[in-house]
Length: 234
Image (cartoon, rainbow, N blue to C red; front, side, top):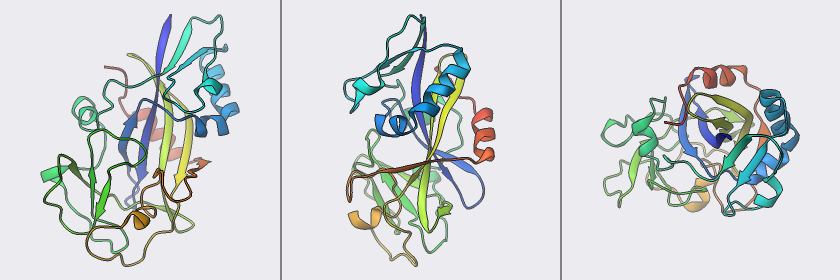
């Protein structure tokens, strides 16, 4: 059997026109894939020329709608990533990403928080703290510089690129924008943001309406960026 991991790269397009990888996930939620299932299946068919097997962890909601068994010798596995820890993938991959801890250089834009504090391992924005003041006590978390991002109709967004990888190949399947629930805050106050204010800057929070909005990203510069990064199973 020829096996591939299903992986999601979470990316920010900065105001400086650069792309930054802010997270890598190996248990991919079904919602976005099912919304664009035809594009997902068409991309796999274009790569392999046949309908392939898909395995999906039972931890993924609606996993039964993603799983597929065929006679193909190719398996796409949505069951985790060995470097899921947010510090481990930074160690093992040379990827463009925000600086962390003592290397953080805060921006000066008045409408974005300067610091983001993250647990090493979490999902759906859990445990994240945004602050406009320098952070000293992180409680076993790490500090990351917040990248001022481009907007869609006044809303911050992140990009989720769903790819399949193995030791020799990386194939993108879906390019999706994930829109924040609340619009950006003008002239952001000092100090730590509230849970409600986080909805203006974190696109995958499982609070508020609980509905994460996805739309397709058609930026050719993003596609060129993905082609250039060196991202395979190590």
